[in-house]
Length: 192
Image (cartoon, rainbow, N blue to C red; front, top):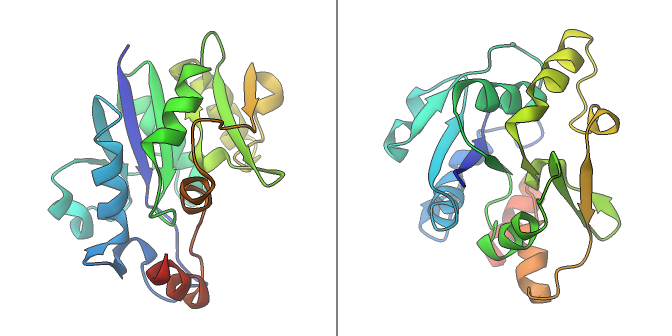
């Protein structure tokens, strides 16, 4: 089974005021932490970014959104359209502490599902989910109709929701689902 890590780095970072994926944390920029971790649990890795130049240092394939200004759903569409894999492990660039342990729990439950979406502290995290390429027409249809929420197509596909991670300790879970959207959260990230 071919697995592909997808790092979504197309956001505007308006609340942060600067490109959050390039903020330094513990000696490396945020996106480097994500790439380094994902390479341990996938066969291949791609970055989705509309401006490729800032990410060339990662030495990964970079694809732009094919649908402009359509948010992370367009990033997912670009990954599914441009790169062939069985499972896509998605990570948003504002989640610098993603863990292969969590993705492994999700992938073990993929079976015949089109998507596996984690639920942590009562909240769905579609930007930390696992998807199959079969969802591409549903994603494209929703983009074409301006239904741009990451879960907007979930009612059209077979989704497995996972809210228990018995093999993963609480601290790893807390870090995996931590995201930094503003300066206060960035300061918190540097203390984790």
